[in-house]
Length: 338
Ligand code: ADE
Ligand code: ZN
Image (cartoon, rainbow, N blue to C red; front, top):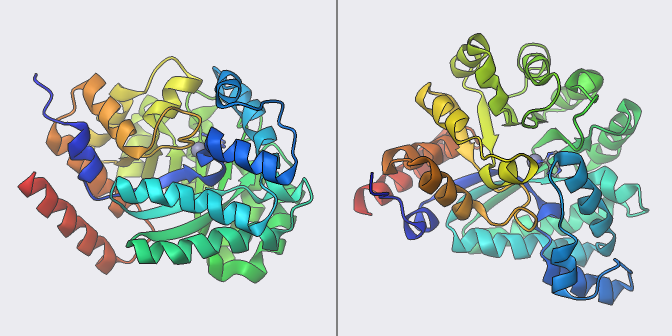
């Protein structure tokens, strides 16, 4: 089949991004500039050296490169600049709505006050409105830290509750099942926050983790989560309950030797609310459009399938039904005229 999906088409297509770690959008240029400004030694002093340090072939080896780099983020303005740099990319790629993950414990653990990063990130989301982007924040707990640490983080975050819309769960899943955080999710939900969580690809006990997330904890979305195809009954459950799946093809191909194209297509065909995202674009070779484009190119997606993925991105988002209808109408019009 001659591929009908071009990079230009996916770039201009209205879409939502629901799986984006703001710390993972730290490009080498900004990393080096902040290192210099804040007098932080990151062990590299040129773009080439930084890029050479990006060697990982699974989640754990990626995280080992990822966390130390965050030392360059020190002031409220640093977090603002980081988020604004991402939002400028988002604008160029017609991301109309974005729900941005941030990792409080990766910053509080190195002495940065909660107030410092939440205020910088939130100010960027307010300024995004002038760019016609609707940007929201989701606070993630680091699952390789203790439940008590997550509980304390939630407590610390609650005075800023109006600045973020939900909670998520990220970092190393190996031997860190979602049930470890069940009580913290219950507290977060009681506080009016929405729930999502990572189920990274090809993790040990993945199906058990996904089942607990869906049937016990009651998350509305799963970040990654494509291993669900191994259990057709669980797929039926997810379709019935309109669970969102935020897949990240380029990220998949860094932590595993594959993008999970067939799994994404299978979930799409079965009517699951699966969408395409960039995860950590500065580390995994591209922003959201490149994720759509490479998936479409390598797995022969039709224009209709690509548009359905974008429709799903709005449907799985945490915006009002009215706002979803507005964005989806915009998307339909784009698909009709391009
Ligand atoms: N932190 C940043 N990206 C992540 C991912 N894909 N999985 C788990 N933790 C992460
Ligand atoms: Zn992620």
